[in-house]
Length: 438
Image (tube, rainbow, N blue to C red; front, side, top):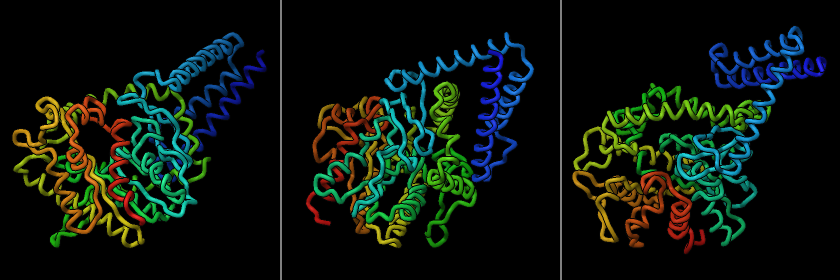
């Protein structure tokens, strides 16, 4: 028994060292300092502990350590079973890596594994003759639903009824905006050479996220652009590190599984993810309080973006957003990709508090919550860019307030529900493809 436990502890020590080495190589690829990594130090400390335990500890103490490890294994198995059954509460996992675990309970019940290229989407059909890169933020990534229920996957099913030649590549990144889509389009061309690109603009946040004054996120932690004296889009110098980090993350999932293995393992360990989720939930509460203190609504939308008489910062944010979309088109044009645009409408809590039935309005008090979406759609049409406006589609189909509420989680103010994704995909299909041979 003593020999068996000693060999087990030595094996665990070896695995800890291997894990630390792989994680260190991962950090080196990202130019991150190794000495600041708690993960590496914990893995090395664990290795030394298991070596000492196997070599020096008495049998009785070895058995107690084994009992603790076995108990943790049983806890992990219980958490894994609960997660796959979709009943594990308070845990949110959305790490980016090939085959990484995704589990989401904040809205809906996203539950699955990322594809071999690190996207929360079914495996890409890269042999199809006509590929579409579907780019956007968390409304496209859609960790709130199954990976087969987002608007990109729904659109692919609709198109494949037309022809098996179609393939839609869902390239959604949570926490991003069109400033990031510029780089995602370049990434899509490098790796997939799609013939078309659809960029989705989430009107709930993407306008305010164009400038740090409205987004309340420091420039060194997010990608921001400015307009120079000639009105041309230029990267905010402070955002250069954030942009590099984002692009490194895009390319990370294309590396070998040996490099990405530490992230994959961590994403699947539910004990670890439970602890991280509890920490993040505490941080989220503080972040929401900060947003409200800076004038944002409780659902995180900054009302400045929707003001009938917008502030200078709000006007500049819209100008920069449109310039970012123009740059997205420029990227597509440079690679021969057809560029299309989709706007995802926003309906804040005050809309549901004040509106009833089908005779509703988005003009409430000093705010027009459809104003930015109309401006983006009008800009697209004026520049010959095909556009589908979800807000216009909702109005044209004459949905009542409760039907609109059913398209979004959190009482109509959150991310799209499966019904909302299907609605958006159908609108895209009808607007861009149904009556066209191209």
